[in-house]
Length: 121
Image (cartoon, rainbow, N blue to C red; front, top):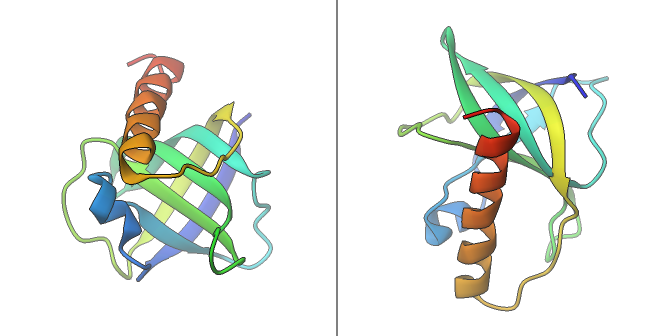
């Protein structure tokens, strides 16, 4: 796939933290092509390091606004205001609505396994 994204991390609703999988919500630079809605395996480049990432591209279920957010696998820290570069590698699946927190947490855990496998980790 190899789609490249560049964006600044902004404050979100904190929903990722409640699942145990915090995400960086991105505002993409103007003119950057957004991937179709779905879950993707990607590489995230930040401060000369490369992290595996689980990228969500879609529309927020409640706000009905487009969103791009990424969980950096293995990263712990505050990214607000930082610029991240992403290389989107593999589409994992379509987005889906889940009815409860436990189902969401299990789906994300499965996605993380799929991302790690897709990236050869």
